[in-house]
Amino acid sequence: MNNIKLSHIQRSVNMGRAKDQAIIPITTTTFRHADVFQFPFLKLPAELRNQIYGLCLVSKDTMEVFQNPNSVYSVRTGQLRTNGGIAIQFKRCGQHKTYHVNTKKDYGIGPLNEMVLQILQLNHQIYNEALPVLYNQPLKFQCTETLSMFLSRGPSTMPQMLRNVQVSASYITTSPKHKSQDDIDFVFDQLSLAVNIEVFSISRLYFNHSEGSSLELVKIFAEAAQKWIKMIKGRQFGETNWKKVFILGGSLDFYPMWHAVFTSAMEKHLLVRGLSAT
Image (cartoon, rainbow, N blue to C red; front, side, top):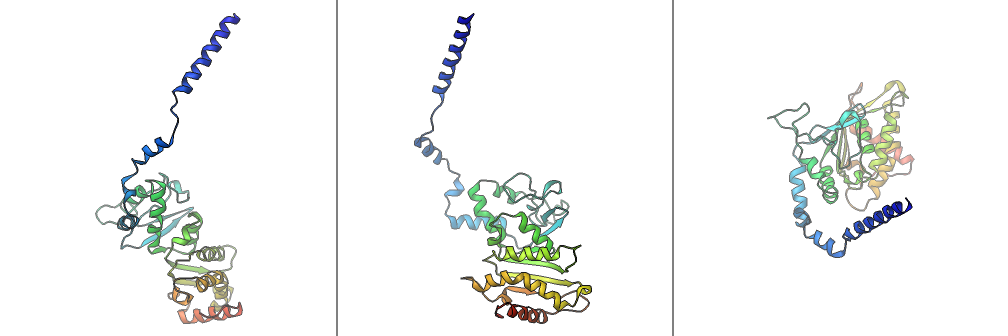
């Protein structure tokens, strides 16, 4: 009986050795052989690759970003829209859906166009090269909360890619029922990392008059914007005058709050904080 067991064990050991010997070790030659089959697109000059990214990812139509409960999506490209209403980070994964404005065929929020998704999923190098091209173009956000959600769910490198950020409406209140102040604080914290930003605009600015005058509530906005303004003033390239970077439209408040009035209130607050007007 013992002899049978020993024979069985010996046979198992011999089979294991045979399998080990059958494994072909990976050598430098193997890697060199694999290099021959490099994706042809990556053999193109970087400048030409960027031009191709631009043709595929950039459109004359502004990318507009909206929000649903717990999710954000884009009307034009749609790669920010998430399945099941659960927001996920912008990573190369198959859960994203892409859309593109087209009058020929409608898919609810725009015709389905998988080009953006396909390009970003090819490999890590193409993803890292193409993503800045996608987000260097103007981005229009429904409100400050949408921008806050967009920045919180994006990669840590997202702010550096932004050049033109447009917000349709921003509502300022200190009411605990709303998180507008938290959103504004977070947005400016993130935008202070956007060293390449050329334009930051808000089309409409709303204030809650029950909490005080509009000029008093401007201080809340100015307090949040300090860090971003310091970045603009201190950066080594690009416009260093925040008033030329920040653009404010009219206000749909009880009375129009024009840009000059807002800017004057901002300047007074910044001077108190030791920041010059320009």
